[in-house]
Length: 257
Image 1: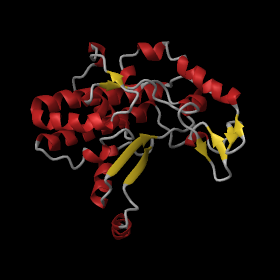
Image 2 (image 1 turned 180 degrees about the vertical axis):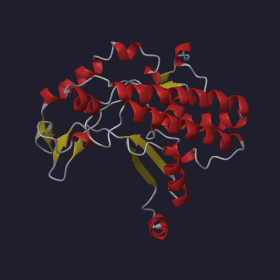
Image 3 (image 1 turned 180 degrees about the horizontal axis):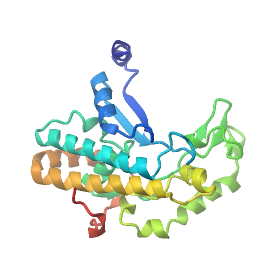
Image 4 (image 1 turned 30 degrees about the vertical axis):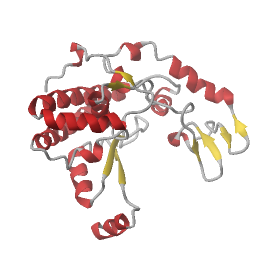
């Protein structure tokens, strides 16, 4: 397998690995180490979005195991970074990986305005030219919002706009909102049958990752300020164009690890 991946990488065809972490194996560190060893330059480790009854879905218990796995990864990466080694940090330091993008926002002192662009900033197309709010909705009956060359269903799309504007409730008052930006609309529909509603498991993972990112950034800044400054320069180039100044973290975040 390694030879095949190396051959593809030589041709410039292999750059990024996208991984889905499930309730069956919520351990990001060994997966990241393996992919870095294989030569992947960018890695994204995202949580599975599945119906609650699915055998691979994240539950309350497996979500806690997942955060424990992320904690082990963060401590390992911090030990490396303190020695000036970034072999495990660089592949996840970007806007695709959930832990990496929180580090980017903290280092660049930027915040996310709205996490999910489904149906507003994003559309996905299937092989027949049908359009959907995002890639997760592709092929799901009732969620086709138009077709290439044939216009859009503004009624369906307006629901995503309304869901985004409706985040002034519990989400906007949450301490983690500047690093989160609100729920995934597909996950909201999958669990609740409607848009704009966060789920308990999603919130637990988001808050856990946000606490870890804050702890990591504070610890790295104290342990290796030169490396922290270098990370901040890289992060400034990686932030999204709609980022806004990040408010100071509140004590509720609980950054002690």
